[in-house]
Image (cartoon, rainbow, N blue to C red; front, side, top):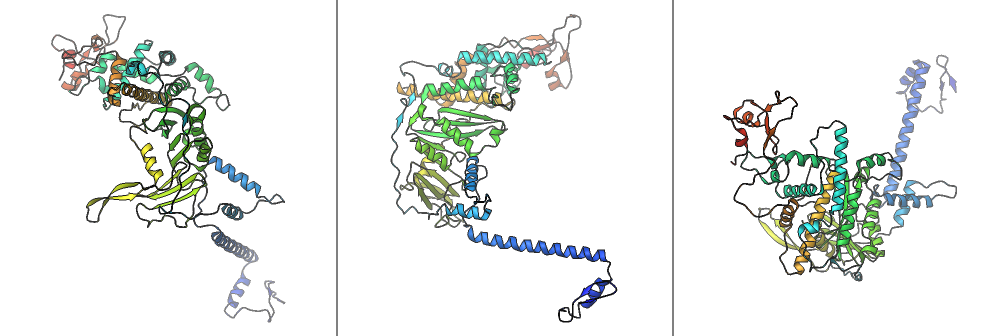
Length: 612
């Protein structure tokens, strides 16, 4: 070894020297650099070497793991709470004797080895349907009342909204308004009673049948498109004030419940609890469902609450429901939906042998096995990524598979079916065979634009699923054409209007079943709502040729003042609109709540109420 005097750098001997003449200038240049610069450069070189070595190790591990991992095995669904618990328990059981955990690659490969893959079968392969479940309902399916008794639409509606429940609703609403007035709200309020509350419900149903742009449009009188009926029942501001302050629970007890937030004693549904329990008990007591049930998931527009609805798949009668609010309605795992279904499909209340059809939100193999253990069948669409579903690529559907292609795998009582329609459809069932010769028709357009109808084979679970879940007006009772909709208000008031829809629809179903047993003509839901509105508002449905005049449409002072010499005035709305001039007046219409001129030479009050 030779050491230089100038830099103290050690150079190799002639035997160990491998550098060429081209590298010698760079060595001389390095020797001229300060010692600190050389050390920094050496550290950078060592860091780059370590990074490159780590990249090579990662690439080699990925290459090995890609060979071990099956190409058709996607990652598990992170949203399934119960599945995560199962994975955690399985991983903890694979720990070594020294307490160390195996690598992620080893855990994944061992989990895949525990699930043997099967090859998908086609419609040409025979599949034996599971044994038919014996149907033993707890009560005789249908309305639980005698058809010999005559029931009006109002009588049946009051079985859900009883006078006792409405009395509680009125008391809580009056308390809510009193709290707002104490805080400075300027309400012209008189306590509401049971009769007036029923009239308010009748107006809500009237608005659900006759659609207008805004609530105030129902009291507009200066248009050829005006509807005179609402003004004969209730003043506009009175109706809006009731709708904005409707309260199902005691507002004073609400504050006590809010103080328990974060504790087990807190009830997240306290604001809806009184009426919710009444509606649920009435739904279960007045009607017993038939064999086929449908499970639906409904989310409010603002995600403030979520409804799980169990309905009779034949007519849409709501048998039971569950409500979730707050963060539980927005982020809900598979375990919560599974528990909700098992709580609603109670065999002690319903009986055994029922077939439950459900949408993609509820379907899971774990739930279907639990229902099968209760002697209840299940069928529903599912997503590709849920746990314990076959993911084999052997003979699976591909993008090039033709329309009508069928693939299926049976795992004990569970049948997994894939069908190619416009896209891939995945269905799971415990009550069907894979294919029983059913067909569907689809309209296909040629390249030239001509439309032709073609027939394709369809699996049995898909046929029955669309039969019991796809009927508009039957399987979706909360999204009808005549559903009551109010955009303003918190989640409890929105839920109140949902309860009105449920009570009206269930009452209509019971009414039609009773009149059918008496061999009479049933009513459509729209005709039933019209008759219910007439009875709630205590008016006659017969058409009269004379104009109905309400006692509310009378001139009253704009505002009462203790000084009779100085009466308050407002601008006349008709003069401002038609003439573009602002004329002050001391009079207004009591029903319309608008200022109108009432003078010898200018009678805007008469002009405003004149039919046009």
